[in-house]
Length: 120
Image (cartoon, rainbow, N blue to C red; front, side, top):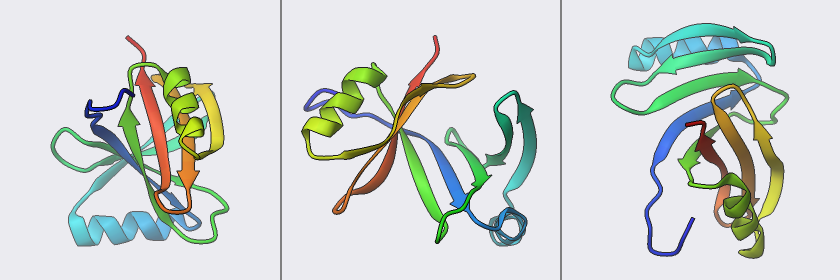
């Protein structure tokens, strides 16, 4: 992430403590279709948001449901360190997944954001 350059949101992920109710709510309200995907890392619910933006839902022990935006970066390690130098807490150090690398950073004022580097 360099100053002055824009990095797009490429994915929105809902973290919820009640996945079945969240799926039903968004299907009814927005018509969003879901697809369960099983990987060696566990299962994931892909979410068809429409357009170019990808989405998903995960069930976890969160005290309240929240949307986590994924912002595309050129280099996950550098972007994570830049966030840390800017005062962010690193909630998830860079981690490789099937499609790329991600980290999660947060500040009290800005909330949480996932940094995403796609595999090429």
